[in-house]
Image (cartoon, rainbow, N blue to C red; front, side):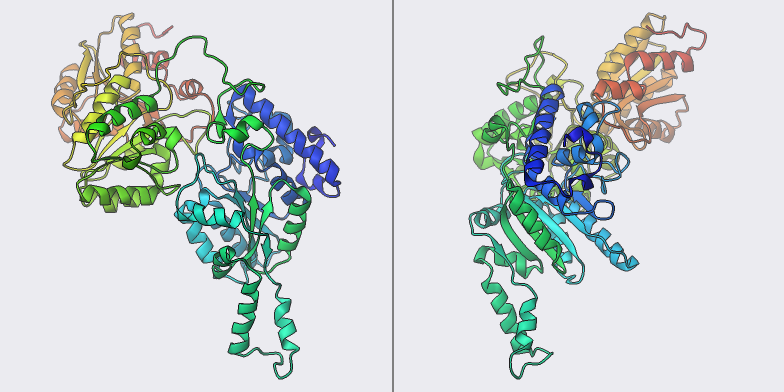
Length: 635
């Protein structure tokens, strides 16, 4: 059978081992061809090909449900559920999503972009099934990296106390998240991986006890304890913890042996209560280059399959914001041992892997545990350290209570560096950094800033380190800078709450924040071609706003436009409008940003065009709204 003929996972039923192995080969070939051509996640999906095939061969997915944690390990799942013929559109506008989406396919039973959610959602489905008196299997597939997230452990704790709720957890253990895993849980799982395969004695042990003389149908407390003790004898010492948590344990199983996987899954499906199947896999399996560099090939830009090297750029590109951030922070930290860089399993994404190499004692990776990262930073700040929490905008959402309760209420000087703020592109709604301005701006004691370019980012890193009177956050985008000259050292802090005038004009006031400052300058240039002179302000701070600069200009010019790369509700434009109203300055205001919608996967430029956030689109709307007698066509 060819994968193109497979439109339903139940078509795997009845296939021979040789046919299943051929399917696995086809999945890997398509996966590699697609990522090499257009980029995307590589290693995670290659590592779960046999796991996925074996699992689906033992389930009826017209009824049973499989939940994939994170989602980028689910590329084989997508190909086995009718999306093979469209897989070449992966992560492209109107194409297959890079993560799981319930609206994309009926077999995407739960959306997943952030880690550690699958067991909670799966348990909810299993409990709903039992409450409704229905019969189907629920399986949550979670990586060992995601198991470091507190939410996964909370779900395991809950499920382990429900002995009559049938649910399977498949632990995809490849010793990695994006980077090598850290912490005691990772160390424990490494011990389990090296132990002999184990499975628990079945509950027929109780029946065997009942046939003993003088025992009968009811076991005494003493006999119950003896039965439990005998069950533990069947488990290696390192596997006993999982059994104590209330799960029946199978493993570790070779995650690339289809026959062993199918046999184990069939046995596990027969068990009552929560079951954990521990599967040892190799990230990047089947592509030697990815197996050897599991961090580098977690995800890739388009590359040459033979060499594994990325296709060279046609022209030199400016350094990325993350790279500039790390260089600046490392330089400052080399002179200040109180600076501590903190990441939540995103060392390579944030650039802190470079910081770690130079200053390992000033570097902390907490694993996929953003809540812990924030409160850990609060504790460091209490003792006079300068914690710098580098966390993606979308992932910091997971630690909101800690930001409020542990940092802002206590007014502790934690420096939050929000990478991937704004439109991130191909990763789609789960990863867009849209909401940080709104969710941080409403918090007392919080200062919030955003650079217009990579040089200003360097200044803001200094600003954040030197700001010790309370928490401060800096948001910056994914991707390369705009190409302005950079200083190697000698950066100066920006006074808190101060903006700057970049261009002067008397007809309209354009207020740009962060990445949209460059767009504001483009708009001003386009407006000038139509005889409209604009003042352009780089706000730099959304909290506190530079009201001494903004309010007099707004009152004098009488027309205000705000530009931001974030949600409009509660965002930068809202802050400006609130300030104008609070000061009785009643002038027309037009806000440009992201409306109350989810931004789907596409390139950043495609998303901006769809949202009306390109320079020419904004200039056109400004002319129509404020200067209707002017020619309205902007080229």
